Amino acid sequence: PFLIDQIAAGEVVERPASVVKELVENALDAGARRIQIATAGGGKTLLRVTDDGNGIPREELRLAVRRHCTSKLSGGLDKIATLGFRGEALPSIGSVARLSVASRAKGADDAFEVVVEAGHCEGPKPAALTKGTVVEVRGLFQSVPARLKFLKSDRAEAQAITETVKRLAIAFPGVRFELSGPDRSRTLFEAVAPEAALTRIGAVVGEDFAENAVEIDAERDGVFLSGFAGLPTFNRGNSLAQYFYVNGRPVRDRTLVSALAGAYADMVAKGRYGVAVLFIELDPALVDVNVHPAKADVRFRDPGLVRGLIVGALREAFAREGV
Ligand code: ADP
Ligand code: MG
Picture 1 (spheres, helix red, strand yellow):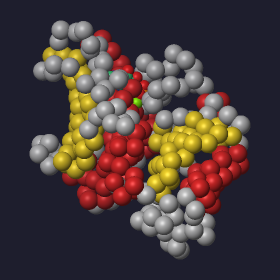
Picture 2 (cartoon, rainbow, N blue to C red):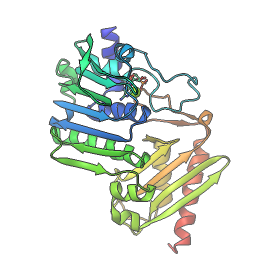
Picture 3 (cartoon, rainbow, N blue to C red):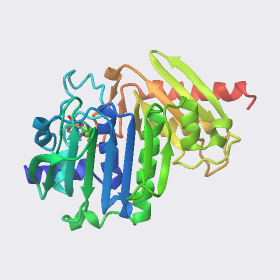
């Protein structure tokens, strides 16, 4: 199982930012209202995610770090309501790092901790924690030099972590996010909660974006599009400043990127990108979110429909503004 976990780790955890994504999604799935992320060395030395969610009962702690032990598949694969569902993240992380999970389940009198090192699990043993869960990942890929050498500089990895947290922060304006250095003294990103969606978007993308954006609200054949699109005259865009969500999940998808490019075609200068935050809601049966374990990719049943919806809605909104 250790080797299988290491192979799975190659798909689920590519870099520190993918670990952060998995851990924060777990916290969100557990109903957390406040999520603190601490990092050191671009996440290679340390990643710690602290949440105030429902926690993990003592008897489930060991299972949580074992392969395919998800508590989230009650509805079946086609009815995925939570962000996680494969039960692969923690075992994968535990196979390529020192992983500790401390938790106090809601209503429990005590907290417990398990530690996974080189695929070997120890505990549960008592831990000091008043509520929620603390997951700590140390020395990511230190034992897998072949993977380690594909990581970028600490700075670049830290940047990717910040991007990941920002993307999730937009999707969950009711949750407080705090990203910091190892001792929480150096805040790298913070979003207070609860915030109105646009306030949160302003906090993440920039106040200037919030002021230069038009609201998008459209529907076509049961596919709903909402969000905000920067006016073509708002010329700050780079390719990172595009935020897409499908049924509440942050995604990176070629259909969406290309649709957005189409909506702004001939309206922004060469080398510039439209800035937008777009939420797409559709029947889960019409989109496959199960393409890749990291779950950032999606496959629409009808990409043409989604593209037409985006281009049409943005062009219409720009026209209304006289652009
Ligand atoms: P998945 O999220 O796909 O179910 P993971 O490997 O990410 O799989 O997590 C395994 C299990 O551990 C989850 O199903 C959940 O029951 C539990 N778990 C992990 N992180 C947390 C957390 N922060 N709070 C509560 N439960 C958690
Ligand atoms: Mg998960």
